Image 1 (cartoon, rainbow, N blue to C red):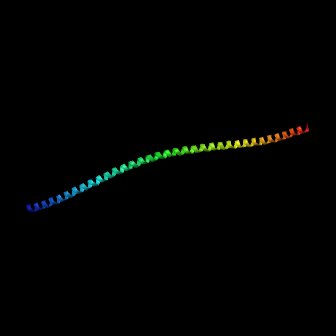
Image 2 (cartoon, rainbow, N blue to C red; image 1 turned 180 degrees about the vertical axis):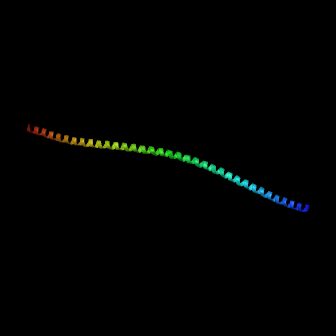
Length: 125
């Protein structure tokens, strides 16, 4: 009958209104979740961009330090070569001084001998 159908229609309308409210709430919650997820993605993308930038800066610093180390090793090698040359030169100088010293001693001995001969000649005259 019509009254039963009217009661059923009202009940159905009430149920649909409740479901509509639930759907709107679920839709609002889903939009909020999506918005939060999007914000998090944006934050992570920015964080990744900063990390990549920092990584590039670190790589640049590493390249600079590698170049400095290479220069230091080259400088150390050159310094060692110069030290070796100076050591050799000093050794040569010491040998020369020793030889000159020996020559001086021999000359002093010859001079002393010549002076003795001169004194001997003076005494004999």
